[in-house]
Image 1 (spheres, one colour):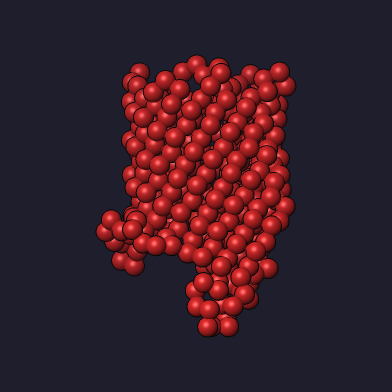
Image 2 (spheres, rainbow, N blue to C red):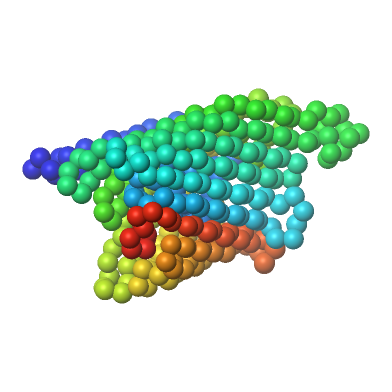
Length: 309
């Protein structure tokens, strides 16, 4: 009975905290979006650094995302992370870098993080993380139309950043909440009048591995993201893994976008690709309207078997 309540209490706490964060972040119905990507289930460290403790190996991860192929100034994102285990104290440390570009806007953020886990039962852990760094935001509005006084003032800001994360996990599941970016500006929404409006990001994430047979595993996952002053975005994905090597899956989000996901996990390397397109009449389109996403991961140290979670 004690073990049962030990498991239930952290889950209730995380879900309650998530509902509070999402409710707070959705209080104003502005049309803004947090940073979202389809391969989130395998690249969560920049969203919640507490996730880094799920793997006893070190890892280097790179993810690139580009929307509207062939269109100048289209949104692009580059995500990089490095995680190093500190096994003696059941902790990890590392860095992550995020760069977002949209038209004349460019934002780069660099954070260092530290995460520590405590063992709740034989196979369940609760990890917490803190990250800190700087973010640089540049908007070259004057390049749009130098003759228009509305766009005469460029914006350049460098601000400190701090965030935290909490994750409850076991051998084949995780559930977590995080606020990795406090007072973070979202690309594509700034203006001269809103140049000082900095908003915070909130995330809820969860996934688990279900063994179908000796050769096939299935991983459902979800990522809920909310930006202060915006509606929350819900992502739902499912991936089938064949012999822990080949992955085939899909992701759908409440922006009415669907993505197919493929991955290959060989030795210490994992390569992933996703192709996202709209499913409603106002965002459905051809190749140029799609979003392409490529990821590459390398694990080192105590790698053991291929990492699925």
